[in-house]
Image (cartoon, rainbow, N blue to C red; front, top):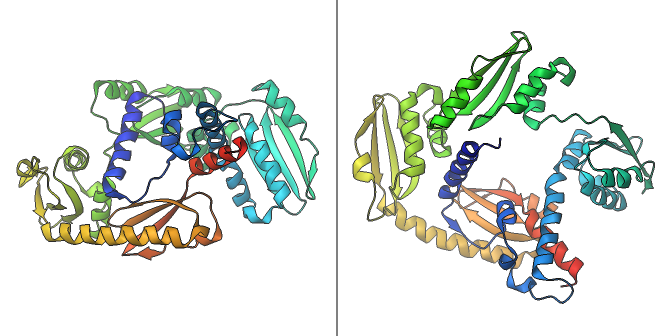
Length: 405
């Protein structure tokens, strides 16, 4: 999804997540930061080395990060083989890491623990230099394992097409080439997923609604289009923010039970209304009321405009929960101190940063270990811990070591 409107939707969703995270306890380098960072943003402790300039080391950091980012395909292959990374001998793991750099021509990996084989499926005519390097791996034996390369003709199929094929239990060959090509060329802002209906020869694309002329034009261009005996249909949906989804679940409701104009109003409130920090939403389907509990209301806000507003038969109300705000700030300060102490007392957890919300603690680690993975899903201060590996932190450490810093 490359259209500007699609990126806007992605940004809006991201903003919704960030707004829920009310405090960054310590600094953390996110993957998005890695892509947008400049050499000047490299931490001071890693600037000023003699063997490499800060610009050179940051270029290396991004190279390492991209390799780690691409290597997710290796993790999926291990999972399919019902293996964990720890089951591979260290020298095999190192060989795999060294081969990750060629993943611009690698389609997928396959691990065969019974025969101790690593099979790499790659495509020809994509990168001649990498093709030569990867060919040299053919038949290589490392740690009792044999590396084999299976060369395939290059056929680009995007991930969304592959997921749709898998969901319909179809193979690539069962879908006409012109249909695949049309799917690849279709661009609609806010695309969420694709679905294939082989019985009725239908291609269905689900999108989040974007209120723009460009979006409507894109939808009209696809809706009902017939290609290769298949009909393309667009299903437009309103984006439902996470806080609203939680409220729906607690009210034992589905998003389909809300009128479209109500969902649109909720999306506008979450992303654009200046009503302070939201603690929670509450939905009353019997009386058709949506109540928003907020704290830390700013001086200039949209509360008065929103209070009592009626949309689609539903009434919106805002409740200022001032006492919760005071308790929350106090709890947040205590939580921050405890998390900082946890990081200091347990270096084996390799914690690089935290972010908290009323329901979760996002914990970034420099490398996944049994110790920090054991924290995933545990509860601290009524918040569920979610462990995230921070590839950019790891890449920065490796680049520093390579540069001798």
